[in-house]
Length: 147
Image (cartoon, rainbow, N blue to C red; front, side, top):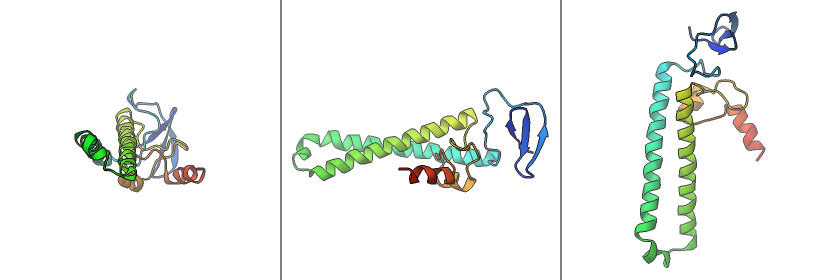
């Protein structure tokens, strides 16, 4: 049975019962590890994040190559809007890449799948769609509403 550890107490998310036991987690595991994710779920999400990282790295390389290889000749002919789109696309790709790298770090330290605000588990369905998500759907809506 997979238990989420909180201090010296463990909660069983399937029954919502709390039991007392000694903590036997590895020192690198954070207490917020999402108990609802199976090892298979985590492996699939890790693979998805690695694929996203490669995609974003390739995307940034292509944007940089296009900008440097034709910079002098095309810069004079390019509309300012096209340059702006390329700059924004690169900035967006860098942001997503940073989010993916942060999610991989959370996977490595055992804190993946816990909301950064409320500390509750992020729904598996949400992580399947946005594996780099830092917030549960509720907290994400609150953050977006505050913008």
